[in-house]
Length: 116
Image (cartoon, rainbow, N blue to C red; front, top):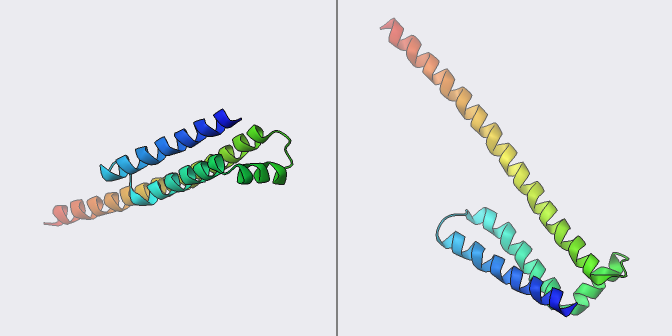
């Protein structure tokens, strides 16, 4: 059990370092890095606080604490993936709207060229 918590702590610290390094090199935008940092800190807190870990296990009604850890981790990342799906969907819609506006502008430009 302690080995699992130590692995989770190391994993969350590695995730924090990777996100901060990516942010520093401008590979990731600040608004996206915040989600990853919050998730990594949440994992770190759960893996380092035995009382929080056992409390989450009791709250979820699970007798096996590692199962509670997997459930919490899965839930956190499922929420993050849902958030990123929303962002991607919005970007796709914006991209379509931009392409339509560009097509309208090109149409007007060609019609102006034909007039002159």
